[in-house]
Length: 117
Image (cartoon, rainbow, N blue to C red; front, side):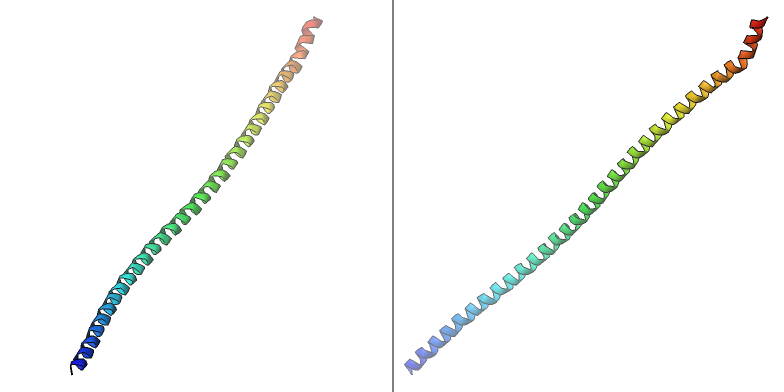
């Protein structure tokens, strides 16, 4: 019977040790699952930030493109205004020249009358 008790005690000790190891593994598994969940949440947050940063970069690139297009348009308008000013100045000079010619043409008969007297 002593042998039976020893064997039974050994089985019980082995069972207790196995149960303790199993409990440790369950706790470890729960801890690891909690860590995985925490890391997934962290990864999700980082992915959202990266997506937002990507959107900001796209917005910034679009704004830069629009700014360049506006700058080009302004420069083209400035060139066109300069061209129109030159044309205006040339037209004014022509009008002034025509006015002088008209003045002398109409004044010429009076000059010739004075010379004939």
